[in-house]
Image (cartoon, rainbow, N blue to C red; front, side, top):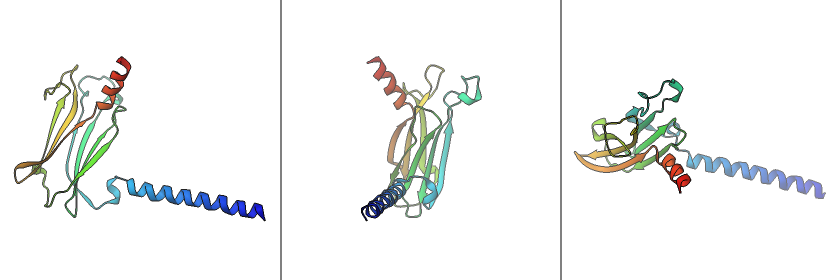
Length: 155
């Protein structure tokens, strides 16, 4: 009798854990596949394409801007770089967004818009405009994690 009770408790615990896992996974899922989003703007750059000899070493940075039917705007930053963790954020926007309402300015860590081999692109200044004025502005660092790792080693 005790063994049956123990089996029921173990199976119930496993089912509960799996249920909680799937519930929380769905709540934190930020992929665009589960939302009714429209891609408004996409821009992709490569900071090192000019400087590498092997195609597999080419790094890509991508900014995608989506809008859902209720006019909320989602900005996704993606990269194949191992020092960047894909990220996103959302902005409440009470009207339809057009690609003319989005400005992305790519910069190097020194703030230049003209990249060089020793000063490559790593920042994206994303601006969302409303009626011609800046409504939201955010700088996304594609190299922040790498810079932090280097400074941690240096001390």
